[in-house]
Image (tube, rainbow, N blue to C red; front, top):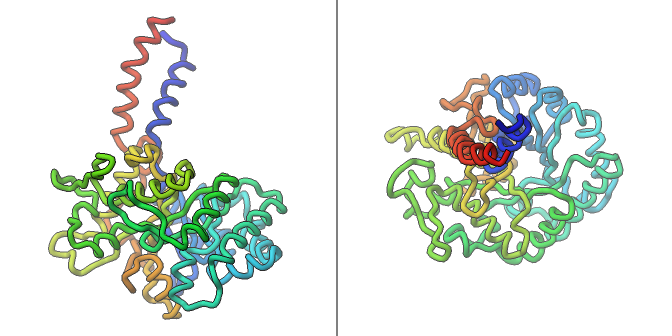
Length: 389
């Protein structure tokens, strides 16, 4: 019999081909009339949620996740991007209030400089030009982290799929839109490559489904159906769901720029509550359960076998009741592209709207497909190893 270490090595080899995506939730602690961050953090820990994307993070919210083993992706508010770009000390000051007092007791995995800044600026008619401020702001935040001797937190920024991609189908023909491609995306990808960071994308199959009447709803909801597929006529690749098709469109566009190996994180994805779905089932619940099952499988996409590194469900609570209506409109448009809707998965009393289970979203063990693959590999390899020894 092969030594124990050899079995361990074989298991690790199998696991490298079968790692599941880290699944998280988007949470805006600045929404009024919600439970305190400490209660939110304890509830999410009880639900076995692995990661949280904090929009408009507050120091109290960052502190609340200390010692929870939940990783945080922090998004710097969009209105701070110009000051970060203009002054290194502005970025440092933000880190002194939001990161330095809590790191590493609070696990901060990444900081996004703004959230879908391009769309937000266009919607608010702001004077700042993201083509001249976004990359300098990211660079200054990166330098500030290094000056504070923090090397484990990368920097990036997020984009909305529908506002930066030329097409979602066929994925192999997708490219980033101009002039965003040459002015922002190209230098951004170089920055991400040099700093070992990830590309952040807000990706909503709901939006593409609503904009394209020929797409069956089941294709967007991960429903198993013999006719729920689309073939990329250029590559011959078959896509069984809209999510994978959109992810691979991003990968193909990155490949055009020679940067397809940069990890991709889906910072926001979800499905809004809709009255029209009551007759055929709760579409939001169907999408979320389909997404969780798909990401747990560890099967990735046709163009990216390891899949997206992380995916965050948008969102924990509804933002439609925010007191500042102008901020609500710009925030919602940037995420859905279709106006004000209810995207939250939880009520303010901390009960779930839908029957969804995060408890088995751990890597590998979340889906039987990976275990079957591992067992098949072991059945093939172990007898050969025994023969050799």
